[in-house]
Length: 564
Image 1 (tube, one colour):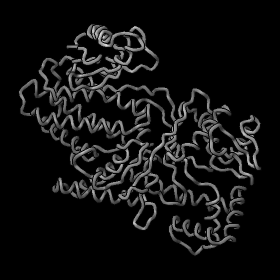
Image 2 (cartoon, one colour):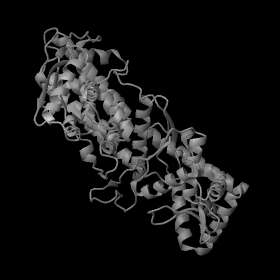
Image 3 (spheres, rainbow, N blue to C red):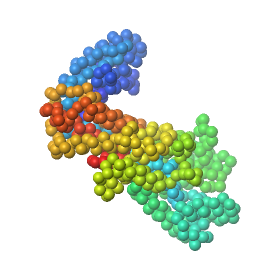
């Protein structure tokens, strides 16, 4: 059952009441300190319509008062230079609580139904340790996958791992020449790289090994397959610790596109999209500092050819309606050229949306990209272990009576949730500071605060009994109750906005404000000690808030334990 928000109903009615509106008009409906809802968009239309702002607003107000379904609007007033302040009836607000509680989806619609999104995220490298640089892509991509699926969309997850190229010929050659080295694969990769940089003869043998690998040499391929399998097991372990949806089945490595690269180059040249320059096959774009090199002068292929093959495959074989790349913002020029080239070649038709969901970097306390004390990029497994250890101490201090097994589970849920939320609560285009102390705080905009707000609600509901009473729409409402109901009413709009803009931080902000609203509600409104019908209505309000917090945290990939 789709339950449209009061804000959406008001926006639609305002738009219908205006004599004419430009494409993309936004009534700018928001929560108000002076009423329940405020609409600011009418004021901006007064000048192009050549109407006095307050007069136009008054006409719209009259239409809103009579045009919305009966019993919703208590009062509509023109304020200031031409704003609309709308007060809703208590019956409508309480009725909305009952409607959302009655629906397992809390009234959230399915606007992504029929939309097939190919989502490219995480992409670690074979034989190399996952580090803090992989954190943002993996967490943001996972949240987007959950949100799009929840809204009815079909999501095809693609983990474009690095598993092909010179570095793997280098590593295979090192393993062949150093069979006694039994260190971890990641350590042997570092040793191979150091030797490659220091020994020209080894570098030459490594390049020859690359040719053998790409030519299908059985021995080289056998070693390569073993490396990929070992790394896949490692990736799967990290993803399980992190609690994300990615599995080995989602891997679509660079190597999978290798058979397509010659065709990509040939078709671009035949279509006149690419031309040879200094021996390399290039695509030139207006305003670009450098061409997109599809085929290098030595006949080899790099990332551009692989990414173009991936676009073609995702449209023709995976049948994408939308392709979203969750990749570092520094790759923006590259993706602009790839998308432009694919569109010029006809591989990315106008009806298929291509989105680079760019993100900033993770910073350390010094304001620079996060590193270990030794100056290396921080390994992801170590960060997660430290977060769980800190969280376990926080939970133990708050609830020392928890059994050891439950404490360990809660520590994992809180620790991993804190890492995810610290990332997701920052606008993805911004850099953010990795601060373990702040992310574990019990107050402020942290997942720990949200988890405790949820656990407190579950505690109240447990004391109230198993059944949530029916809502009585004729009961009075305190201002903080009205504010809480209006916050709850906006959940579906916020989730849809996350999907539209690939912006998980909008959901984080919403959940934090919801938790603040329920805290204010606690302070003013007794729940279990109130007389009926207030008691029953407040229990219902607690139930809806708890379900909304749990659902919202779940869409972020964060647990909502019933007790902390």
